[in-house]
Length: 86
Length: 331
Image (cartoon, rainbow over all chains, first blue to last red; front, side, top):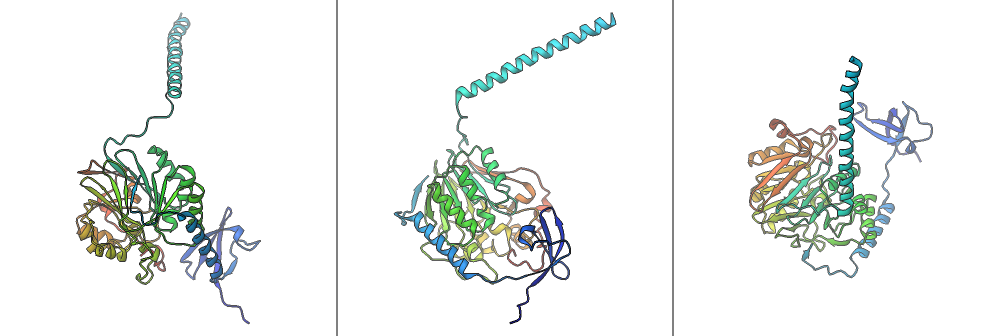
């Protein structure tokens, strides 16, 4: 099975521990990423392929954790209370 | 002789300097000793005036409310990057504890500094939009609320938070109990649309705090009835074009509007369309990107607005351009 095409970006330059990355033919989008997130040995001028894939399982895990936190925070509360004196 | 004279002339100033040093040193010692004896500084007194500060947090929102009797409420906490400056601003305003912290919605330009606030300053109550969100920033904020034992309240229309001296906050949105706004324009944000919207009132003065409310939120608020009139409007969504509708302005009838946005924002906030609507409604505009921190003060009748620095009137009516043609979210 052929690899899905990713998004091609270019490492325009490295500023300290940050890589300045350009996207698009006119480099109309630029963003910075710490070098530690890039393949080891990445240098200025490198072309990189990045790929975004939905990670619903990760989102679902986060949703469940937040739901549990909310339950913990509102446990035993009078949720119908309308007036609060600060 | 000349040398002696010079020497004598030199002697007198040296003595004076020494004397001045002794006096200054004694004064400083007295001051320090006195402070130690007095304990902590006296509580900040707002002299019967309600104050609202639109803190300068760059491309984000953070509003500090101090009631006439000294109750304090923080509505949003800026970006993660501005957290240090925001907490320094709270200290500058002598905030040693918050009676209420509000997260209008879970985007990081509004709650980015909230965890650090919760860790740095005692907070009694926490008001949240009630939405569940899946970012680490939101989750860590909730954990900080839990770990600090802060009372958590999900916002619901009609809730009243009484401060003192008759000052109060009323929740206008969200409707609550799962009645979320789920239909938004294409590219719009459900989280923005379900922002906590508050009406702060004190005597005859009122101010609307809108988070990132969008036109759908404004329509729902207007449809719910209730008092919307406010002399000051914190403009929704940093002045984005899909908020602050002409109908909403007609309902609120503000005299002044605050826009919280960053000088370096890429999203085109505030947009020219929003500024034009405000101008057509004869609303005086204040902007944190051009004027820094903005103070609103009211004695319950009139109000005064004092920005930290002056900006040219023409610049205040000049919208910003999005820097990337493919950025739609901020439109």
